[in-house]
Length: 281
Image 1 (cartoon, rainbow, N blue to C red):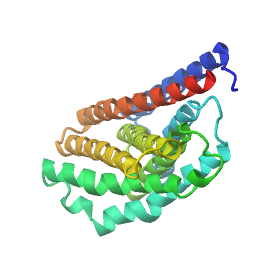
Image 2 (tube, one colour):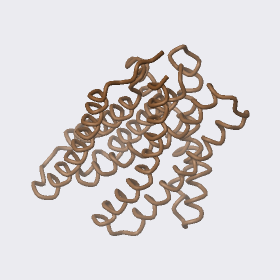
Image 3 (spheres, one colour):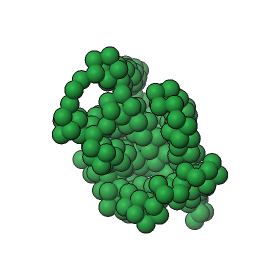
Image 4 (cartoon, rainbow, N blue to C red):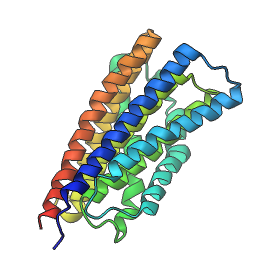
């Protein structure tokens, strides 16, 4: 029988989550206003290094946020970190070259709304979400550490955050650095979105492993995640393409936050239900 967690423990987790969210909001506001009001002067090298460092901060904050959700039997930190790095490696080795060099999405994806939406789902969404699925399904999924449904969400969000971190890092490097104001918002958006969409895949993976579900069940999770990813891609593309740079940065942030935040809320509730049920046994 598993003992129920003491209320003070739940309160400490809630406080840590609140501190993480406050830190992330303050982080975004400070960096954004630093660019707007202080206008620091960087060399190309220091701007790139700063952008790379900023790419990792939101990913690590969100990683801690999702990791704390599993209070009954937290996963080994080393395995979570390994999946995080694997997500990044798959992005760099397969995902980004496939989308940029093979599909060449920048050449045609923004021609009109419907092409952007369909391409965002069928090409960008499925490519990215399948790689996050692969980072979990053919590694930690087969181990003894993956021993409860909620583990799927924890490991998949780690893979998604690794994928997002690599997207952000390579974006900064290839662009020779990124403006701090627009860059920190983009980085935060990408991190939360990829974590939440991957979490949907992980939710279905966890249910599939421990409950009697049909063979297509996890495929449905990948489809749902790909659709969410494609809608996110389309919204960001529409905002970027419309030309009002500063205003659209905030519009994009709000749109992505609503979509990814709603997905994160669903995942948090799913984990909470599992933890509550496990603690009551």
